[in-house]
Image (tube, rainbow, N blue to C red; front, top):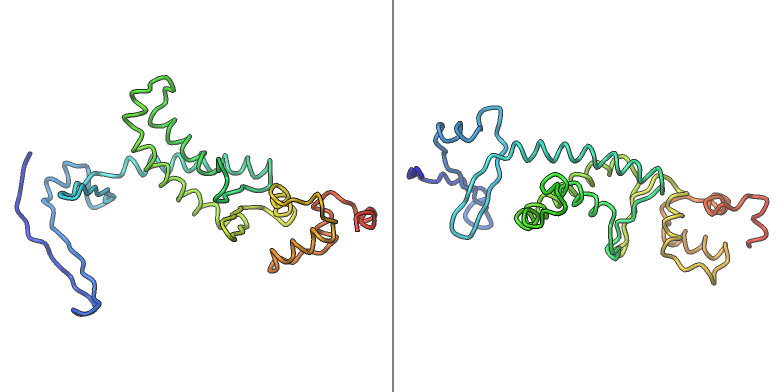
Length: 214
Protein backbone atom coordinates (compact mmCIF):
# COMPACT_ATOMS: atom_id res chain seq x y z
CA UNK A 1 0.00 0.00 0.00
CA UNK A 2 1.38 3.41 -0.98
CA UNK A 3 0.98 6.42 1.28
CA UNK A 4 1.32 10.15 0.80
CA UNK A 5 0.88 12.99 3.25
CA UNK A 6 -1.43 15.84 2.34
CA UNK A 7 -2.96 18.93 3.90
CA UNK A 8 -6.67 19.65 3.74
CA UNK A 9 -8.00 22.81 2.11
CA UNK A 10 -10.78 24.41 4.16
CA UNK A 11 -13.40 26.77 2.73
CA UNK A 12 -15.52 28.57 5.34
CA UNK A 13 -18.73 30.38 4.38
CA UNK A 14 -21.00 32.55 6.52
CA UNK A 15 -18.35 33.68 8.97
CA UNK A 16 -17.41 32.13 12.28
CA UNK A 17 -20.94 32.32 13.65
CA UNK A 18 -23.39 29.94 12.02
CA UNK A 19 -21.12 29.33 9.05
CA UNK A 20 -20.33 26.03 7.35
CA UNK A 21 -17.04 24.51 6.29
CA UNK A 22 -16.08 22.48 3.23
CA UNK A 23 -12.98 20.29 3.40
CA UNK A 24 -11.01 19.21 0.33
CA UNK A 25 -7.88 17.19 -0.29
CA UNK A 26 -5.85 16.91 -3.50
CA UNK A 27 -5.46 13.35 -4.81
CA UNK A 28 -2.32 12.19 -6.68
CA UNK A 29 -3.01 12.07 -10.41
CA UNK A 30 -1.37 8.68 -10.92
CA UNK A 31 -3.54 7.11 -8.22
CA UNK A 32 -6.69 8.62 -9.69
CA UNK A 33 -5.91 7.30 -13.16
CA UNK A 34 -5.01 3.83 -11.85
CA UNK A 35 -8.48 3.72 -10.27
CA UNK A 36 -10.00 4.23 -13.72
CA UNK A 37 -10.98 7.81 -12.95
CA UNK A 38 -10.16 10.96 -14.88
CA UNK A 39 -11.48 14.13 -16.45
CA UNK A 40 -14.51 12.35 -17.97
CA UNK A 41 -14.96 9.63 -15.33
CA UNK A 42 -15.53 11.33 -12.00
CA UNK A 43 -18.16 9.36 -10.07
CA UNK A 44 -16.80 8.03 -6.79
CA UNK A 45 -18.23 6.44 -3.64
CA UNK A 46 -16.97 7.27 -0.16
CA UNK A 47 -16.91 4.86 2.78
CA UNK A 48 -16.30 5.95 6.38
CA UNK A 49 -15.71 3.52 9.27
CA UNK A 50 -15.20 6.13 11.98
CA UNK A 51 -11.46 6.37 11.48
CA UNK A 52 -10.70 6.38 7.77
CA UNK A 53 -12.34 7.42 4.50
CA UNK A 54 -12.13 5.00 1.58
CA UNK A 55 -12.67 6.19 -2.00
CA UNK A 56 -13.84 3.81 -4.71
CA UNK A 57 -14.63 4.17 -8.41
CA UNK A 58 -18.43 4.20 -8.69
CA UNK A 59 -18.86 4.18 -12.48
CA UNK A 60 -19.73 0.49 -12.87
CA UNK A 61 -22.24 0.65 -10.03
CA UNK A 62 -23.97 3.64 -11.64
CA UNK A 63 -24.11 1.84 -14.99
CA UNK A 64 -25.65 -1.19 -13.27
CA UNK A 65 -28.26 0.92 -11.47
CA UNK A 66 -29.21 2.69 -14.70
CA UNK A 67 -29.66 -0.71 -16.39
CA UNK A 68 -31.82 -1.94 -13.50
CA UNK A 69 -33.80 1.31 -13.50
CA UNK A 70 -34.77 0.70 -17.12
CA UNK A 71 -36.06 -2.77 -16.21
CA UNK A 72 -37.86 -1.38 -13.16
CA UNK A 73 -39.72 1.24 -15.18
CA UNK A 74 -40.94 -1.46 -17.55
CA UNK A 75 -42.27 -3.44 -14.56
CA UNK A 76 -43.93 -0.31 -13.17
CA UNK A 77 -45.69 0.29 -16.49
CA UNK A 78 -46.96 -3.31 -16.53
CA UNK A 79 -48.31 -2.95 -12.99
CA UNK A 80 -49.94 0.39 -13.78
CA UNK A 81 -51.61 -1.10 -16.84
CA UNK A 82 -52.86 -3.99 -14.71
CA UNK A 83 -54.06 -2.21 -11.57
CA UNK A 84 -54.07 1.50 -12.41
CA UNK A 85 -52.27 2.34 -9.16
CA UNK A 86 -49.33 1.36 -6.96
CA UNK A 87 -49.89 1.44 -3.21
CA UNK A 88 -46.79 2.75 -1.44
CA UNK A 89 -48.36 3.25 2.00
CA UNK A 90 -46.33 2.81 5.17
CA UNK A 91 -48.56 0.01 6.47
CA UNK A 92 -48.24 -2.14 3.35
CA UNK A 93 -46.58 -5.45 4.37
CA UNK A 94 -45.01 -5.85 0.93
CA UNK A 95 -44.75 -2.64 -1.06
CA UNK A 96 -44.48 -3.18 -4.80
CA UNK A 97 -41.69 -0.69 -5.46
CA UNK A 98 -39.55 -1.85 -2.52
CA UNK A 99 -39.91 -5.46 -3.56
CA UNK A 100 -39.18 -4.66 -7.20
CA UNK A 101 -35.97 -2.78 -6.38
CA UNK A 102 -34.70 -5.53 -4.09
CA UNK A 103 -35.58 -8.30 -6.56
CA UNK A 104 -33.71 -6.61 -9.41
CA UNK A 105 -30.59 -5.98 -7.31
CA UNK A 106 -30.64 -9.51 -5.88
CA UNK A 107 -30.89 -11.00 -9.36
CA UNK A 108 -27.93 -8.89 -10.48
CA UNK A 109 -25.61 -9.50 -7.52
CA UNK A 110 -26.70 -12.96 -6.38
CA UNK A 111 -28.21 -14.60 -9.47
CA UNK A 112 -28.09 -18.15 -8.11
CA UNK A 113 -30.89 -18.64 -5.54
CA UNK A 114 -29.27 -21.73 -4.02
CA UNK A 115 -25.92 -20.02 -3.41
CA UNK A 116 -26.71 -18.94 0.16
CA UNK A 117 -23.08 -18.14 0.92
CA UNK A 118 -22.89 -15.64 -1.95
CA UNK A 119 -26.18 -14.05 -0.88
CA UNK A 120 -25.00 -13.47 2.70
CA UNK A 121 -21.71 -12.11 1.38
CA UNK A 122 -23.62 -9.60 -0.77
CA UNK A 123 -26.54 -8.96 1.61
CA UNK A 124 -25.44 -5.55 2.89
CA UNK A 125 -24.53 -4.36 -0.61
CA UNK A 126 -27.89 -5.61 -1.91
CA UNK A 127 -29.77 -3.64 0.76
CA UNK A 128 -27.81 -0.44 0.09
CA UNK A 129 -28.16 -0.64 -3.69
CA UNK A 130 -31.86 -1.56 -3.45
CA UNK A 131 -32.42 1.66 -1.48
CA UNK A 132 -30.56 3.66 -4.12
CA UNK A 133 -32.53 2.02 -6.92
CA UNK A 134 -35.82 2.62 -5.08
CA UNK A 135 -35.03 6.34 -4.84
CA UNK A 136 -34.21 6.45 -8.55
CA UNK A 137 -37.46 4.66 -9.44
CA UNK A 138 -39.57 7.11 -7.44
CA UNK A 139 -37.80 10.10 -8.94
CA UNK A 140 -38.48 8.77 -12.45
CA UNK A 141 -42.17 7.89 -12.00
CA UNK A 142 -43.19 11.05 -10.12
CA UNK A 143 -43.53 13.17 -13.32
CA UNK A 144 -45.36 10.39 -15.19
CA UNK A 145 -48.14 9.56 -12.72
CA UNK A 146 -50.36 11.32 -10.23
CA UNK A 147 -49.64 10.79 -6.54
CA UNK A 148 -51.44 11.15 -3.22
CA UNK A 149 -49.97 11.29 0.27
CA UNK A 150 -51.65 11.67 3.67
CA UNK A 151 -51.14 10.20 7.15
CA UNK A 152 -48.77 7.46 6.03
CA UNK A 153 -50.85 6.49 3.00
CA UNK A 154 -49.18 6.97 -0.36
CA UNK A 155 -50.28 6.04 -3.85
CA UNK A 156 -49.16 6.52 -7.45
CA UNK A 157 -52.11 6.39 -9.85
CA UNK A 158 -53.06 7.15 -13.44
CA UNK A 159 -56.48 8.81 -13.24
CA UNK A 160 -59.49 9.51 -11.02
CA UNK A 161 -60.97 6.05 -11.56
CA UNK A 162 -57.73 4.45 -10.42
CA UNK A 163 -57.60 6.66 -7.32
CA UNK A 164 -61.12 5.52 -6.40
CA UNK A 165 -60.10 1.90 -7.01
CA UNK A 166 -57.14 2.33 -4.65
CA UNK A 167 -59.39 3.78 -1.93
CA UNK A 168 -61.69 0.78 -2.15
CA UNK A 169 -58.78 -1.53 -1.26
CA UNK A 170 -58.65 -0.12 2.28
CA UNK A 171 -61.87 1.84 2.86
CA UNK A 172 -64.62 -0.08 4.65
CA UNK A 173 -67.71 0.66 2.54
CA UNK A 174 -70.10 -2.11 3.62
CA UNK A 175 -72.17 0.19 5.86
CA UNK A 176 -71.96 3.22 3.57
CA UNK A 177 -74.27 4.33 0.80
CA UNK A 178 -72.76 5.49 -2.48
CA UNK A 179 -73.48 9.10 -1.52
CA UNK A 180 -71.73 8.64 1.84
CA UNK A 181 -68.76 7.08 0.05
CA UNK A 182 -68.63 10.02 -2.33
CA UNK A 183 -68.85 12.57 0.49
CA UNK A 184 -66.02 10.81 2.33
CA UNK A 185 -63.96 10.78 -0.87
CA UNK A 186 -64.47 14.51 -1.44
CA UNK A 187 -63.53 15.30 2.16
CA UNK A 188 -60.38 13.22 1.82
CA UNK A 189 -59.42 14.42 -1.68
CA UNK A 190 -60.91 17.91 -1.66
CA UNK A 191 -58.39 19.25 -4.19
CA UNK A 192 -59.37 16.63 -6.79
CA UNK A 193 -62.51 17.56 -8.72
CA UNK A 194 -64.74 14.49 -9.11
CA UNK A 195 -68.49 14.59 -9.71
CA UNK A 196 -70.85 12.02 -8.20
CA UNK A 197 -71.42 10.62 -11.68
CA UNK A 198 -67.66 10.24 -12.25
CA UNK A 199 -67.29 8.56 -8.87
CA UNK A 200 -70.13 6.16 -9.71
CA UNK A 201 -68.54 5.28 -13.05
CA UNK A 202 -65.28 4.55 -11.24
CA UNK A 203 -67.31 2.09 -9.15
CA UNK A 204 -68.67 0.57 -12.41
CA UNK A 205 -72.11 2.05 -11.78
CA UNK A 206 -73.74 3.41 -14.94
CA UNK A 207 -75.55 6.80 -14.83
CA UNK A 208 -78.95 5.18 -15.39
CA UNK A 209 -78.33 2.95 -12.35
CA UNK A 210 -77.24 5.77 -10.07
CA UNK A 211 -80.64 6.32 -8.42
CA UNK A 212 -80.66 2.73 -7.18
CA UNK A 213 -77.54 3.36 -5.10
CA UNK A 214 -78.52 6.68 -3.50
